[in-house]
Length: 109
Image (tube, rainbow, N blue to C red; front, side, top):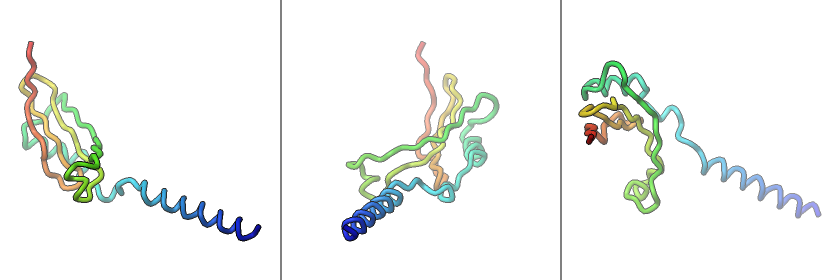
């Protein structure tokens, strides 16, 4: 009886340890680019003034993607834009500070 209880307790503890380690979110210390730094980067791309929208987003790589195969599981980034016709938008990697996507809105009326 004692052996079964001990075995069950060990299995439960190992399960808890495994789940806590495998589900860890990215440490806040790894996210190096703050909101104010992202806005400074956006200013270089012509995104400044009133009506600037900034959102912190997360992208989960699919298991078949190249990023996932290289060991990346999530991409943390800032989405900065002014939502008006011909206004620019950018997406900034929150870890490296690199702009990986940029463009302009083009509304069709």
